[in-house]
Length: 294
Image (cartoon, rainbow, N blue to C red; front, side):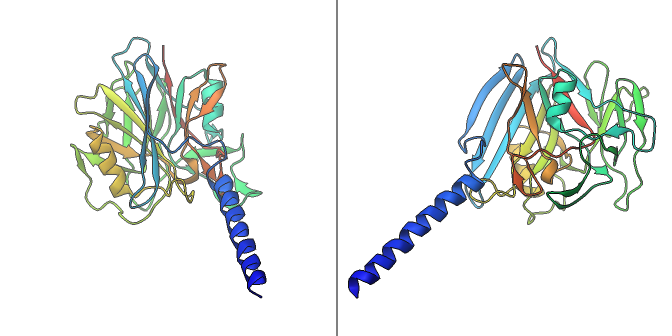
């Protein structure tokens, strides 16, 4: 009897070990960035840093720092595809980077229509017409005024022809602009009232105090044993810890994606996006912010 009991225990241990290994490969080992800190130069004036925390929740953040004074650095907001009530055709961040020959790209503003009822029942698919939620302009064309929302006016980042950035300070001549979800850092301090309980993937963009450095940030989430995500309050503190003086969040959740151009010219995803709870799956979105780097 004892031998049978020992055998059953042994089988249970082996089954548990197999289950843990399966969970690891399902939730961690699917071509995701290793959960270890990294800091490297990608291009002249462009550095990448991976920030990893284990407590109180697992969190992996990806940060691009761009020196706007570097010769050859330029920025692009997704141009309009039409002049209709849905001025953009949905595309993934990788497709945006590839189509416009960029070196770095992140997802942008929230958009409509959108739903996600399952892996086969979602909108938009690639090429479907969509509209950003907020004001949008690209290369001198202010093609979208935004949609009236119950929560009020959305923050806007303006980018001049010479790639000077300003938040919520509308210039006389608008060159490029992209809206966000909310401001999260103002004058080096967290914005009051930020949610401190909901963990999600996040995307944000920020500036240092003198505006020379632009930061693109994506935090992975909804991936057990890898990265749970981050609250808005904790995201603000992470940004402040990295010398970001002002920042706004962009569309998060399954939209959060950071991409770079690989050595062969093909897009390389730097984070671990999760659309429809499928790790590694990119969501087609409305607009983006891209970087041309020397």
